[in-house]
Length: 357
Image (tube, rainbow, N blue to C red; front, side, top):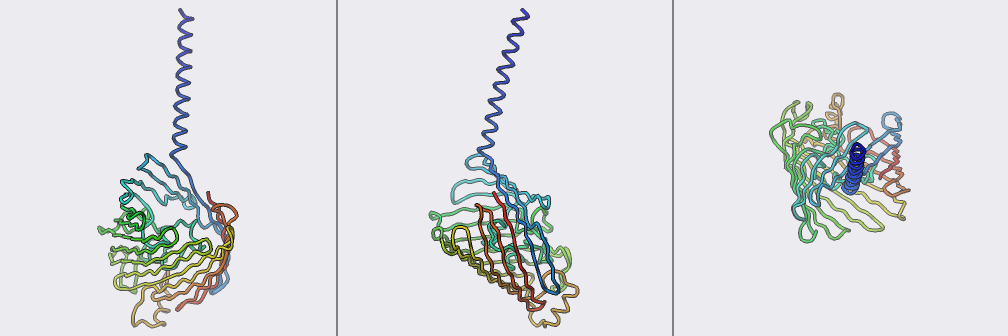
């Protein structure tokens, strides 16, 4: 009797173990099919001369993205920044049909072409145009807004129609930046419409309508910390791509309680072969014009002002090259001459190594 019981017990354990192995294998295979990983790291060396010489090696950006395909219509994504120990994006997507999709969570604000790109896809080492970085708030140059990497919390619907000839985006967002609760009861309304002529040409327009909540005092506008203010943005964008040349140009403008900002850039990438590119760019930005304010008054403001000076006009002239030594991996070298209207001009040499997968 005992022998039979022992035999039956061993048989049951064997069956359970085999079943567990099969189930575990199915789980592993399912995760392998539904999860994808991507990421990049960018490090470099910067030399800058303005009032004195400065140079440094720096780790510019690190990003890791995990995408999960829950069903054929439903997905989720998380993007982490290991360098700063924070989450950049976390959202879920649902596809109802090609012309109506929904996204909820934290993601890139759908304003301008440039802000939609990963830093691993932007050809300028400094992270994009001055106007985009300022008006979207990617780098903290706008002292009334958080440094937000161009991301915000909200809800978005988007899609394409007429066989992909047009695509659109409409979003309601906090307007306060990533990983931040809203500081006022107003929300930003963001919209974008693009015209796509095949894979080669794209023309678009985008806007942000909202009210910001100042995180710091801004004396030129008489705005104090915690005060709400009108914060509107709009942009016109164009892009052309071919085997020999990529051209991107955008005009951007903003209005903060009546103080108007405007800027534009044009970037050309010449593909000498499938590994080597020549990079050139012109970048103009005029931040918050104040009529009737003299250059001396602007200069006086610099003694107590942090960030970009009120009424400052800046022209960036950029030239360089990039070498793609492996898919998504490149070495970049760029010279930047910053011609300022108020502050002293700056010359910079930027280098960057990008490793991505």
